[in-house]
Each structure stands twice: as C-alpha cells, then as structure tokens.
Amino acid sequence: RRQGAGARRQDRHAQLSKGPQSVERIAKFKSRPPARVGAWLTVGNLVIASLLVAATIATLRNGREVDVARAGDAAANLASSLGIELGAELRLVDNALATLAGRMRQHPASADDAPSPALRAEVAEQQRLLPFISALGFVRVDGRAVEGGGLQAGPLSDDERGFLLRAA
Image 1 (cartoon, rainbow, N blue to C red):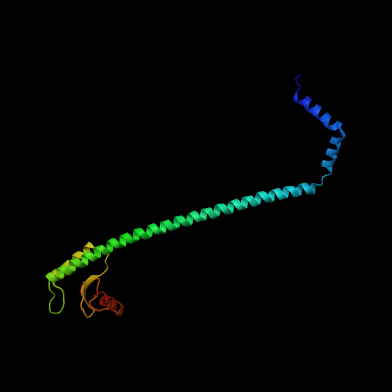
Image 2: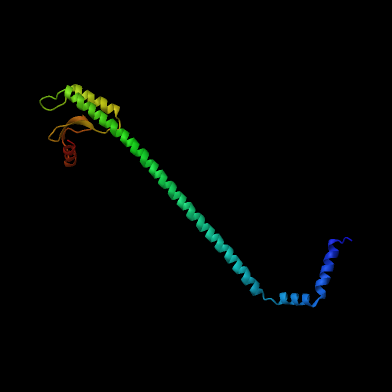
C-alpha cells in the first residue's frame, strides 16, 4: 500500500515521540549550550581560512618561481642577441679598419703626416657605410689627431692617448 509524503512524516514523528529514547535525545540536544556549537563553527571556519591562506601562499610562491625563471630566460636571450649584434658590428668595424689599412699602403702620407685626399675619401666612404661609428680618423704615432670624421685635430686626452698606444 502506498502512503503519501505527509502520511509518512506523521508516522515517523509519532514513532520518535513515543519512545523514552527519543525524549532523551531531544532533551540532550536542547540542553547543549550554544557556545559549544559556536566553538565548533569557529574552529571549522579557522580550518577553512587556514587552508585558503596556505593555498594562496603556495600559488603565489609557484607563480613567483615561474616569473623568476621567465625573467632569467628573457635576460639570457637578450644578452645572447645583444652579443651577436655587437659581434657583427665589431666585425664590420674590423673589416673597415682592415680596408683602410690596405688603402693606406697605396696612398702614402705627405711630409706633415697628413693623409692624402684619396685616403680622406676612403675614410669618408667607410664612415658612410658604418653610421654607428662616431669617430673614424687618423692619429699620428705621437698621439696627435690629424683629422677625420668626429676627431678634433690636435692633442688627444691622456685617456685617449693611452688607449691608442696600447692598441698600437
């Protein structure tokens, strides 16, 4: 025989309210202090909050490690590409200087160590081909600049003279 939901509820309620055990259970539940229930709720909330804090810290730490690794990779890639570019530019400068050294043998300097007009044209051409060079010119053995693009004629500073003497 089928019973409706309301009838089943009434039967269950009647069974619970009849026995002495059910009365004890209800009395025990009613006598439980609300502070004890509140304490359990507080402990449960603290456990959940601490789990959330731990998860957040772990996520942030992992995210930081990933960001540091990415930054290291980016810096290494940038240094590598910068090294390649600088190497290429230095090879271009080396080729330009080798070209000028070969042409200097073909065009000897005058008595006052001034370069010939043909050699000046060669320097101007090399400087036009290498726009990233700020100064390309001639310096005498005693450390005096003769002339050239970006070089002032006259004595060089001690820093420049020392560099040129070490380079020679």
